[in-house]
Image (cartoon, rainbow, N blue to C red; front, side, top):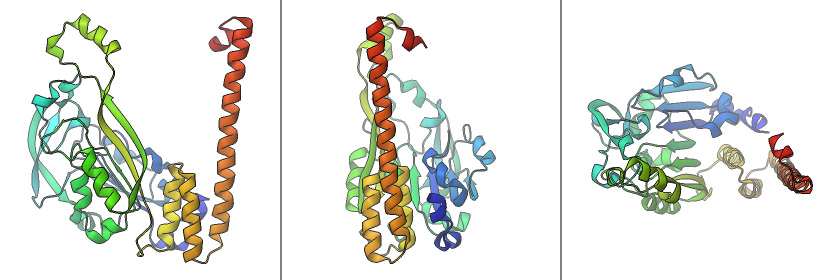
Length: 319
């Protein structure tokens, strides 16, 4: 069904555009089902884990931008290269606050360089692309300011967005979770997914190696940052049938089948097209198949437990 939608004329003339800021380590895996029909813009200033991108052949077209993405108008910006490539940022790590956490050494600054920068408003001049459908950023502290620095017309047409804002203090002057949540809700998005990630609060120099090992098993992780997925409510009147169909795809690949049905209902009211009935049947079929698969897994689990208990053996687990 996704293939059928993306072969329509609306997408042949205007393919989905997926923007991944902070692509070190891998381009967003959720995009795999739509990659061959889509244009991807992968950005990262830290090249240590960025080399794989040049070998990615999955996308209809792929732009690789090895520059800082920033909200200001400077041609070059400070970039703090940290011990871990995944912690490098345009913001200085807050070493005083980080010292209380077990992973503080990952934020140790190896070097600070002035690197070429690209404003969000420069996307068109860099790529020739004038719109973004799915915005994903893991910029280590600047997610919200990057999104808000998009041209208003570009930002209004974004259908899905992913951010990874902090809860704890990791960078000086960073965009925090509360600000991201408030802005996105006011901008017509709802929270489709949120994973709270964490780390243990252990100040390394206060404990011996043996004590730290014991504490690691005793102390729970504290919330450190959140991985947000936002989907548009489609409240803006500017959206065409292309955006409605693409919004259905984004909801579908995020397994938001309830919202998929809402989009079908709204789309059917606004646009006369046979595709809505097909999408309705397909979504209903998928829901039933997902339930059947889950039900089968649960039944199998309980049967294994019952047989294991009956024979008082670990044979099944070992098998």
